[in-house]
Image (cartoon, rainbow, N blue to C red; front, side, top):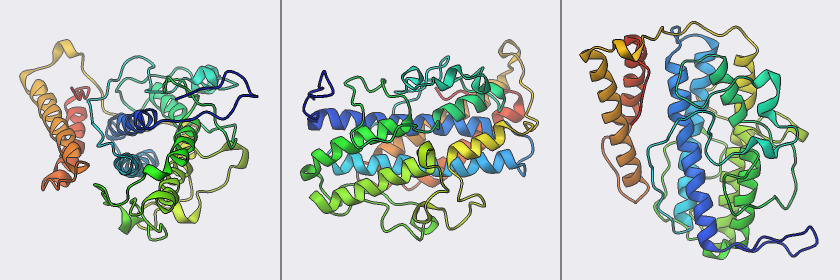
Length: 325
């Protein structure tokens, strides 16, 4: 892809390899959030608490976002991979908060923050807010980067992908390995898949990108409720709130009680067993996701998704920190 060196240069021209790279990283980022959010959610003792319910609604939508990103990837000829996410330090995949002005990660209300798996504490909820931090600048032509870690926030990242997708819309092929688990939850959405090719296909691609960003962090300059078309019509009692607003509600309220953790040096054989069960189920889920978005229909996909959540909760009840690989 050609990146201009000055504001006066011609608009950048994307190639299909660069777009597919961005689409894979979109899948990576959406997939990364799911264990991170689920781990914090299942650390909460009271499952009826507002914090648990708010995070659960976000987790469900992140699964929808993962499906949406993977469907778009397949429409552009990329069957996405689902590598095991890494949760290290403050590293959130493909985002560089220092490019935002002001840098939100330096704001007192979001410090400290951690991108490591852990209970719902200040460090985790701050990271969750930063992941969904609003896109303060909404422009027709986003800042495009060769290095996909060089985007300030998710909104800018998706605007860049949408820009490239529009340039390459003639390469969209409808009906390629599309998956739809969520139509019954979103009765106002015209489609959850890319069924058309070319220009008509780009309308569907754009709708899926809008779904991701509107539900996620939105655009702060025109902050409104989630558009009706993107609202969960089935089981979200806060369907009008985007992810950032949901996490802000948690951040600004007293945090709920979480399960106590024991030092890893005190883990018993039973503790190691619950960890191994979680890792086995998660590896199976990753395998099934690869199959699902490669045009296959693994019979135990839903069972594995449920079993991963149960295994995370069993870890917390045992006093064991969840690990996924």
